[in-house]
Image (tube, rainbow, N blue to C red; front, side, top):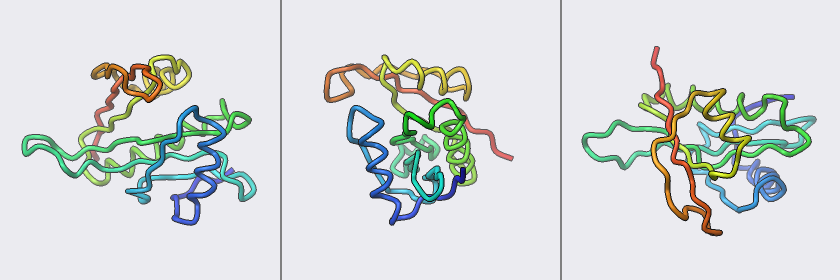
Length: 147
């Protein structure tokens, strides 16, 4: 197993992983320097797409945003998603992000456990009908520590 920074040529494999793992199609490659892929023998088995929010109000500090994260079913429960999240968070912190934000389906218990129980995210808000199918999302945040 190898985790490395995402590259433009990884997008087809990331998209294929996304199509097999998520019930919605959602991709972004705005900030490849804070996006990562997990590989097994050259095959992409998971990824995280993240970006920095540059357009913030004058009173807000820059922050990171996880756009999408996915791990193939056969590679779940191996700590890959946690490793991807931590690497991306470290990259965001090195860019002086105050926090990282993400949205998660209210019904996604596995993701909620990872974000809240393992990584320490807190529910910041509930966004009604956030997803195309009408499901609500938790808007979650994690304050980042800087060295």
